[in-house]
Image 1 (cartoon, rainbow, N blue to C red):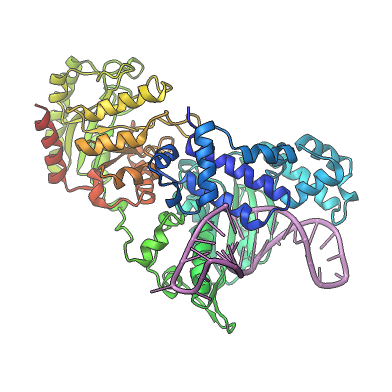
Image 2: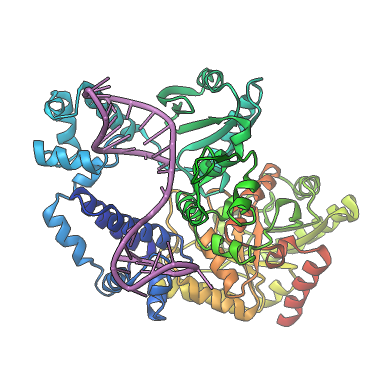
Length: 579
DNA sequence: GCCGTTTTCGGCCCGACTGTTTTCAGTCG
């Protein structure tokens, strides 16, 4: 099996870090890390890009890295990395995970004290041996021990479904303070990444000390990690870290822009600023004369750089700055434009609410079209429906439709199993009775690439199918995506006019942002659904819209954002095509 | 190692915070 993009990226990260430990040029080191970051954001498999001879078109990939990628794809190994591992103990990389330990210190611990791994460092810190080194004192030893304890209890990146509500609660409390003029989520939260490392907040206030005191008095704050005049970093109960920047209101624009990131986006912007004779920091744009230009709003920052404002979800340095310069930023989908949810469950299978309760909730959320799509017969654990029960369910849907009137259109659909052998779980004549057919795989997701790809591609070719549900099958964080040739699936879906789902549940977010972007690039339509099993879960579509925005999607590319008549016409056209 | 309407060679973002220090290096984002 060929290494996937993330595995290749990890090799380059390791290589960069090993070189860094040896004092290699920071620019060379950074080149490896930047390339790794770019590879993680690609929506296409590297093997596919390499086969097309297009590796060099990836930003940050030049002659040397392209050759190394070819080597990895061919052999599964990176000889340059193996060579560095002979010079430096690979376990030394673990030291870099400790807060406060970077490449310089790790290298000195190794060279001066012979420390090669975490247990060795812990012992040395406890025995007071680190303070024998120049520039190190008891404070460093204490910081390292506390950093190791934090590492042990640290939760990994948390799903946005947990981070977002927590952040909103913290923001609400911040905004209650009279000292706070404005407070916003920043960082990866504001960019709507699928998982969040630290919670970042930006506050506008002329009294930073008071704001920080107020924030640390929040019962959810367990420990203050660092505190300066403009910035405070804390650990919350549960191990999640949060940091707050406090800036005066007249500097809020530059500060929010800075705190939102991403780092790569910001670096790129600062390079553009320099070319215009300006230096950009979180405080201001500064002319070479030293005169500051203050920006209270983010729009002003971008405007001074000759750019239109760029939506936070795009700020990954994945081409958005070039698009902004060319006036080609996408007209991004917005939550308020969502009109339909085509993937929901009721008590007829494994849902927790009746069809009527679900329909009333959907209507209350402003949706115009709801498809009830319970599981098909073979998914026994979810009480999948037989054709007979499907007929009974249709009568119930008609009753609810009559009771609720015209404000919301209720469609009968099904989430039909793509069985392990590739068969679709209902006969064609049963599918033909349904308004919406989702084809999804829930079982045998660990099949070899050829087999599971063939299952999904087969479903995309099936004339009775409207779209493929949560295509990769991943669950964040516990289950990796199935090993699917997405490029093949996208090509087939585009050819047959089958849509692909963005499942909004925070544990799925499937397709991912990168894959959704790629799918749209090759001409696929997308459907953003909640997969709701209860009325509250309709609100989850906010997360699906976040993915769509990160995928550069416009309303025209998302069938669930289409006007009701157009969506119904599209559903019926596919239905006619199969009969 | 990458990259180019200032360059195919010579650049490559910016500042906060900490711990150790009398001016700074290292780390972090």
